[in-house]
Length: 596
Image 1 (cartoon, rainbow, N blue to C red):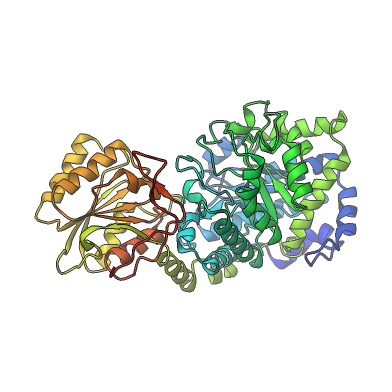
Image 2: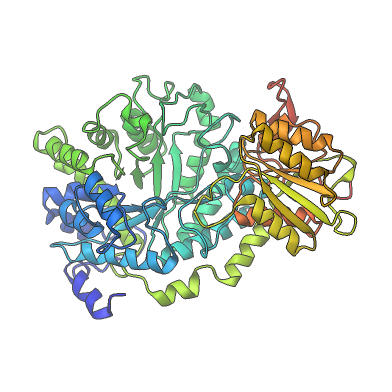
């Protein structure tokens, strides 16, 4: 870690001229003075939030140097900062930014030092997607919480606030000061391929309350929360990473449904809002994605909703924003629409030079850039980055993955597991009458790369609870041979009951469960992602919804299976019949309890 003397020397140029504290706009005069001394190139850079490969700002592995050279034209994060003067950097697991908390802290410090050593150097706003549940960039030993739909099943705003507070404290300790969470989308489409369990649920009011609570938790811990994806991504059947979704809601329905959580987030003082790469004809008939829509971002978000915080795009590398315009036009059009931060363009050089050219050609004014830079610098000031840009190893040790934090996550998870089916009171299983368990099912990759595999986690948790559990992974699309192997194992004398994890259920998974049920052994199915899976399995005698396959949720499900915890979750979305989607099989609020 840099010494205090190094810190002061590196940041003296900025910090000495700014006494930035408080949450109002009282420092605008000083910030405007700071902006007035920036070069045009520095101003353009401040608008970008960019990925970079490597665990270190100055000495990444050779493979990461090669990836940086190929995609960005620089070797390291420090070189990227020196060349483009970017205002933000986003961390990804796949970019090898997040090996462990102490390494992440060192990376954050290296990034800050590289930026503050530049002429007129500014602190960098480091961000990530730490939604918890199925989207999680920082893994164990950091504390991992249930995802949004699980929190929706728990229904506790206090739990949502606690999640935000603890997760925020841990992110701040490792130098991440902007989190792209919570998801404010209202998931009303069971076929939604990109939101689903990342949403708190299908009821706008319930989602709004949990969004506001999580925002309060994060921002109370000194981390900027980000409500996403405006104006609402909850009713799509297309993934905007790969296509261009169209929302067919009327303006009236948008007001009653999609807008409600975003209004709630704004009332809660949300620091940033992320745009959606979706077409929303009722709000803008031009056919442009919302990210590039002046009527949506300036007319509605800024004007009607009165939001004056930071607006950040979703990744500019996603297909939804690239369908209609080239990569050189997208960042310019986003700024013209009202965006402040341009996130992760496919080519930083193309995007950066396009914005620079647009200003020099008069398409964008320097004053327009100054508006966005002021919002960004206000946020950095509010987060204390001018006074305290660095973090310490001591802070990491004291804060990240503490026993108290981990215990809180376990307690919250226990309030989310939802019992949907329990024919003949199969559950809870008794270790005296059903001591030997077979655990089969899907083993999707860990969201953070540090947990799982799900069958192994369930088997280990059940073994710790006094059962003898054996894991047999069968995958998301088990072959006939795999199904036969699982059935044979279930029929073996060493299996008194079977636990099977379903994941966005496929025909092959359905066959697996049906054939396991046909063995006569008690079968307990656990939806380790979408609770909608239960509609495909009318013969299964017991069904739990865990909403994700992260360890904390699977351990909670194991405690429910073993009767060590009561199933307390209630569905935050309706589950329709598989053969008649117009008919609700299990309504919002449904959930069984033991003893009735």
